[in-house]
Length: 337
Image (cartoon, rainbow, N blue to C red; front, side, top):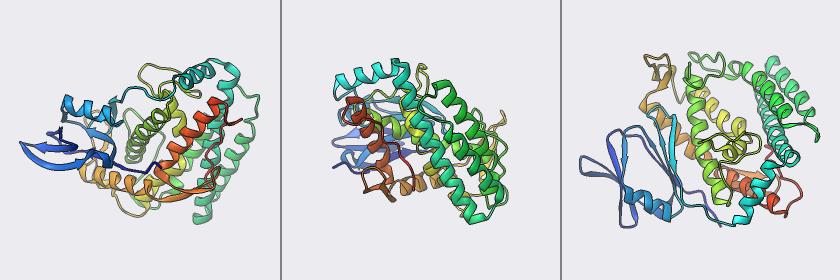
């Protein structure tokens, strides 16, 4: 049985990661700061000026660990992954489905259905808590958009509906924030133009790393998606899978951090380019909360079994692989209860 293991996040600038026997060492100025057995890890994520030895990269590849490189602010730069494993026939089927307009549209539609249903669920929960009519109205509107996603919908139409729903969803994000000092204007990515966008982009990057590792572990190619178009360097399938967890996992985590006062607006600074970035202390707070959130449990709606949240993207990747192999007639989307 697979378990949720730790992800090593290295944020200290000027450190160097290397292999020592069966362990991963983090050193600085020839002093070992941290030493972890590799069998306790499921991935490594580095931020900014962190060196990595070639021996460690080979070691991680042998043990099936991905090593992701992010800028100090959390922008994705690159990733070193283990060689492809699993059944080549599965990946061939993934490519055939991606090239089949009808089957690709059906999977794209299901990812959007899941995203809209989960976003609506989160808005309804917020509406019950705050009594805010605008949030309740947004939930209703997203529900109406979801009803337009019938089986005959094209990929372009599904993407259009997803875009409209995202606009409605983010339009009421401020209504869900209960702490002064945080103001969300609109979704901005490169660069993030406020503290909330900075937080969202950072958590989305972490989630993309986890989803890419999950689909690769299931024997699928993270680059070839169904909802997201092919683009060099973009993990299309990982981004497809992420759609099922944006509102329920990532956005909820960000709002929890803000509304519980775990982070403050003064902990963000503005770069010369106008981008808003969190300080090192806040980044560590987010990383700890992210890891803790992954260890919370939930009952998976299709398997009807309790699972740690950090296992959900592995389960969904496995179910997608079973569908592509023909073991399941349809892909069972993740619907948050």
